[in-house]
Length: 287
Image (cartoon, rainbow, N blue to C red):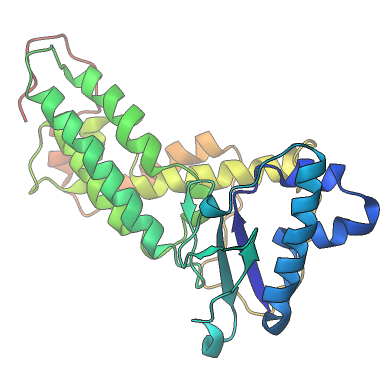
């Protein structure tokens, strides 16, 4: 059994709605599970039906920008590539497709996605360094706002999906550098004190908050597509079960306080380093 990912899918909903009732099962090829030995032929036939529907509705398809990918559960078929032809053009096969900004992989480890996010956050940190070394009045408050808007916004995009990945530490390294730029601290500074000085919660706590927020919406919001959805019974017990939290924002503050108490930091040092407070503009911020 495989999961197919075909891009672009911008007109999927429109196509299914406008397609005759007898052909809708063939059009929904992006959301079905079928066997690999009939995958290529079934997708080719479905694309032929899709082409006819595009022609009737004055839509133009672009096979050169369409990618196809197959994720096999069988390791012996992991390198099997789909051979699909659309408008006499073979579709490009991509082992790491990007869907809604998230790089997918057959093992769902999100290793490639973590590497891509790390590279993008590093590029945005370089802008923060230039801002910190300039004479534009980059005070700590401005740098902190810029770090949250540039680096953290990209690092936490769709973090509820890949937050439990074992490769999340790759992104944390660049977020640590962003906090060092904001505070002017050096690498010997312990991370708990670094984030306390910057006034920003640690990355793992922020990702846990995003994940809890999505879970809270699913359970409480009647408009959520997965509201009151019953999951199948798990066959194996999870090693790290999801915690049942109340208000995500209150849980964020509580988790941060608990992490500060459990961190191996001397009490006297904690008292000398206060929580972040905006300072007046006194010229360029030293790095």
